[in-house]
Length: 206
Image 1 (tube, rainbow, N blue to C red):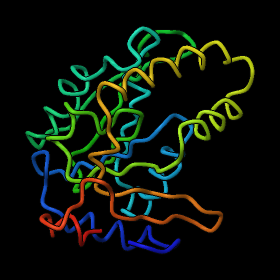
Image 2 (image 1 turned 180 degrees about the horizontal axis):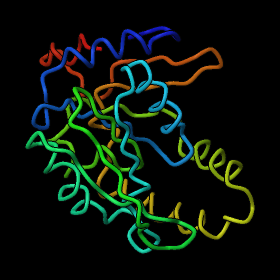
Image 3 (image 1 turned 90 degrees about the vertical axis):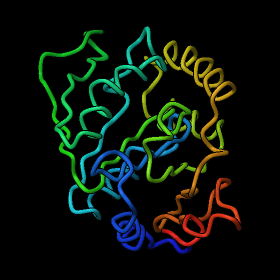
Image 4 (image 1 turned 120 degrees about the vertical axis):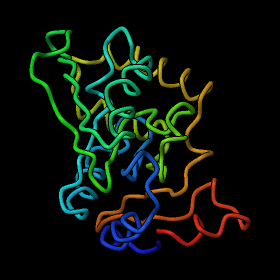
């Protein structure tokens, strides 16, 4: 979907997809840290009438930046695939532990999962679509460092190494159905690397 005012038609197209995780159309928003995933997911969720958004930062930890797959499957994907509510307790990045407050994800028609690695190999079979925030690595990381401030420089140094290692072994972008590009006036959504002439369904939606 070309053009910078594309959230509404994208939302309409996602609603028309076949369910991919039980009754849910699970849509991943992946990209480098600092690429704008959270903001885009929030705006898309609003266009979807308040679709639930699962943030992978809530399932990762300092010690397990990318080793959250089993937790995601057990607490979220499994229940949603059965048409049940998903329940999890988010990680507190200040206290360095999982907090006591439980969160619930309803098996809504569309559920968004956003975070670095949301389109990883283990998650893709559950997805209706994979969207990739198409911003270069260095630009994304620079934005993230600016956002978080100098007090998190040490964390970012370790994060960049971990993210680069993750995507080297388990890349998401080559499997993206759509690339999301941000402009001052909005977003553009274009066909991603996974779209081929032999795959007309993905070629035409959203």
